[in-house]
Length: 338
Ligand code: SF4
Ligand code: SF4
Ligand code: SF4
Image (cartoon, rainbow, N blue to C red):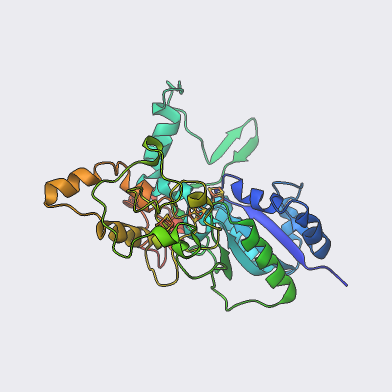
């Protein structure tokens, strides 16, 4: 019997999501036995032409990690959408934009200025920037277009399923592969992780008061937290109440607050707004000045509440600069709030 063909691809990604596949350890042998990997650029030498040569729908499933930042990533996502029966957004970056999505606080010009002119390690007196087309000695070299805005995979192509997390927990990936192989899949659009808050699987759950009241917020690297008690009750900004479970509460088990990488449950439209409103409802003070002083430790609100989800949020990005947005990008932006 022919094995189902499976692809893995990466876009604007750190490579950490690929670790989830490798972290299967010896179980990877069973997976490799059950499937035929036909695309995995991080590990094997596949070319774009190999994908183009496939029949449409030839792959049973393609796991795509990383956000969408360049024209090449859009082209590959669209190509893979045609070649795979199922597309799985794999990891926070593909799901909600992830860490690369924080670049939506800036536009392309300011990112290029910072990278190629202003950074302390750069010497560039001629102000040379990457060119999309370079012609030299009769040869032409092209680079992908770097879009002004980072998008999620689902804002670029239709996505069938999502495995959340930064990186996705191994057991969620393993369960997804088993579901694909058995055909026992939930309705399309499902995020393949439990639809309850992380607190439900946190070993500190019993110590989380029903009515929380925080007078002082603390930054995790400046205190040694009690290893048994709810971190939020200790004044540490744990986003567990706003975050989907499924990781085994690895961070809170390791005495670190949850930063929200699995994203929201289905009952939440905007992860950052949910996390912010949850925190606002438990910080107590007698007057505005006391509350402001309690919140002073919140030095990076966007990076705290939208660390993994800015492109997928209702805000989507800080500003859109029309002159930096090309026609293709405007077309892609259809339905995405500026
Ligand atoms: S989700 Fe996390 S691990 Fe995966 S590519 Fe994005 S930043 Fe890296
Ligand atoms: S430590 Fe965080 S995840 Fe655990 S119970 Fe408290 S708020 Fe919830
Ligand atoms: S505890 Fe939170 S940040 Fe840590 S892996 Fe789980 S969901 Fe992600």
